Image 1: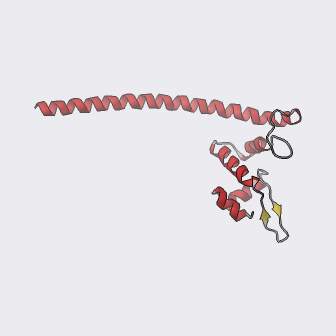
Image 2 (image 1 turned 90 degrees about the horizontal axis):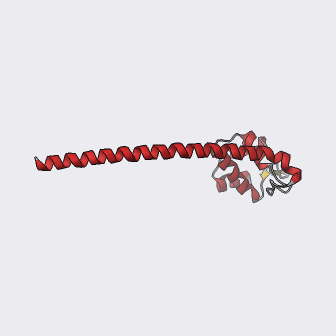
Length: 135
């Protein structure tokens, strides 16, 4: 498929796809006319890249994650040959997981605080309505 179709199917810009290529996160084949051509696996690869970008990883970090695997691109973090290459991906996963757990804890605290404050406001509002009715 052409770059425009890949951009459309992944809801990303052509400029981003070209950037992914410069960072070796995505590869294409050049047709005789010079146009980029992608196979169907590129769709899932772009979606994975976008997911990791949303997590806050850099292109360099993503490269280590997506390149971890067999030459046929199927992930194999337990393959002894690729273990040293995958160790950085494993470390990144652990680091990001710790960050996410920390964010969840912070959000849970915020949720508890807001729930308590809302309950106070609601009880004060109900008390005020009762006072008005009695007056």
